[in-house]
Structure formats: structure tokens, C-alpha cells
Length: 393
Image (cartoon, rainbow, N blue to C red; front, side, top):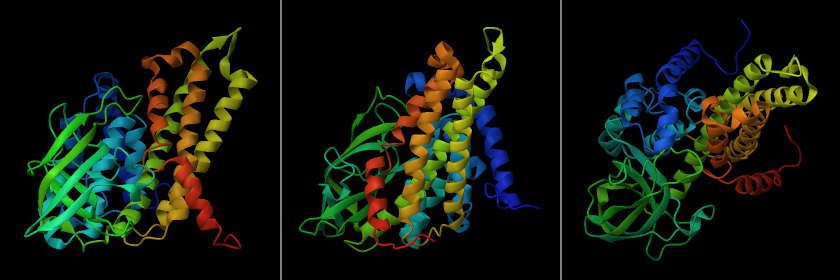
């Protein structure tokens, strides 16, 4: 039997079938409603816990599925094909929190936080960006100082996915990056901060977003927030490595989300172009339309092969895979947006309305050129890494 890069084992194929069925039967029907209302579907999110994928890369001993980066890509691609906003909330929880904690926290911390995160009882996220620090993450201003058995955190975090599960309620737990007072610019420290921590509050739930409206986004505020010392992850000043390692799987799974958007957009425009007639002929008989469909498919397959090849080779326990993890997100994020744009063009006026879904996919696709690293940041990182090479393998 020929090797299938997109489903390298029977377990991967079974996972894809299960998630696609769930996506089509349960996620798809609610997508437009939650996009319009800008609300997070918490009961549906918790069903992902019942399916066992909220901890897809987390070890089974802490409640996860113990699977690899390919499995993570499969889940993100399938969910994003029907509802990228819902998929983004899943990514923030499963990759930015669960995978990060599993890879970097102590066994005691894993035992406290991961089982309830893997079931969906707790909704979690990661706090890195700030009002004045996005791509320049080392410009963050959130500070921490030791005070006996606690650390006192001050600052604000912005654009935090799963930061609020409603207009007034925080998410449950977050991995928060801060800098110890007086520490060097590159010396970051991370903390596990729970809802109910004194001094930790919801600044605002961010609304009226262009896309990803079913994914809750918030500003979180730390005002002398007292975090137990037992919630510090690793040693002081060592979180930069944790951050860089987790950014790699984040970017691969964001690329997989773009694949889902592109695939669905191609399916929609391909079906429409077969059925819709203009001047007595199906649209797909015209060269302009053929170009939109054919180029979209070729670009989608190129991005899909690149993404799954990188995921297949990834070691989630090791850093140092930046060149190609940046590469897949650089290529796929713009590819997904362009394919959704072509789908709207093929559908004409119908593509501009919610009924055919591609206008929502197009709106959602834009974020993937910004979040998790801007395309400009990927270009910078990749050029720096390539400058160290004389020949490509």
C-alpha cells in the first residue's frame, strides 16, 4: 500500500474520519449563528473533550491522547473546514496551553492542570501579546516579583484567545509570560494563573472583529495579582525556550487551519462552477473560472504536502524547527486567504453572502496572516535562518 502523507497510519485515518464526521454533523450547523452573535459555543467545545482531542498531543498519563503533530494538524484542518473560529478556540486551548504545559511544566503541575483541561471542564489559553508588544514579544512589560510563597504580577495581556468565555466571565486557566523585575530582556518567566486569582481580572471582551468571531478574544489585566510560587513553570528566566518551542507547533497547526479554509473554499467553488450556467454553459467551461479553480487546487495541495511533511518530521520535545514551521504558515496563510477570495469571485454575488460560507471563510482567513506570527515576522525569521546555510538539502 502506498504511503499516505496526510494519514500516515490507520490511527491517523480513523482520527480524520471521526473529526470530519463531528465537524460536518455538529460544528457546521452552528457556525453561522455563533459567527453572527460573536459567542463561544462552550457545550460543543466540551464535546471535543469527550472525543479525546482537547489534549491531542498530551500524554495519556495526564488525560491526553498522546498523539503527534500530524494528528494535531488533522484535527485543526477538519474543524477549520467548517468553522475556523471554533477551531481557533480549540488551538488556543490544546496547543497554546495543554501542549505547552505538558512539554514544560513539572509532573505536579501537569497533574493539577491537564486532566481537567483535557476533558474540557476547564477552558484555557496562553498570554503572550500585550497592548504594546505583539511581534516584538520581548518588548512585553508584564512584570513579576517574588514575595514569599507568591509572585506578584502586574501588566496587561491583549488579544488573548479564550480569555473570556462570555462578556463577563474569564476563561479558567492561562500560561502567562512575564519578566522578573530587573531581568534581562530575553529572560522571561512563565506562570500558571487561574481564574479567581486575587488581582487577575477581565479587562474587556474584544468584539466587532472582522473574522474568527466564534472564538472569544479578550484583554486580561494583572494588578498585584498574587500567583503561588508553585505555579511558576520551570526556573526563573527560562521561559524563552518554552515559548519558542511551542510557537513551532502553533504555527504548523495554524497552517493546517488555512488548509481547511482552502479545501472548503475549493469544494464550494468547484460545485458551484459545475452547476451554475452563464450564456448557456456551465461556469467551469470558461477559462477565467478554470484558472481560479485549478490554481487554487494546486496551491492547496502544495501547502498541504509542505505542512504534513513538516508535521511528520517534527519532534514535539525539541526546539530548532523554526525555518519550516515558519515556512508552512507563511505559505499557507496567504494561500488560504487567496483561495477563499477566488471562491467569492467564482460565486459572484452569492459568494458575498453568508449562505455559501465562503465570505465567512475569507474573513476568518485574514487573521492567519497576523496571529501566531505575522507574515512579515516569518519572512524575517526564515531569511535569518537561511543565511546560515550554503546549500539546501
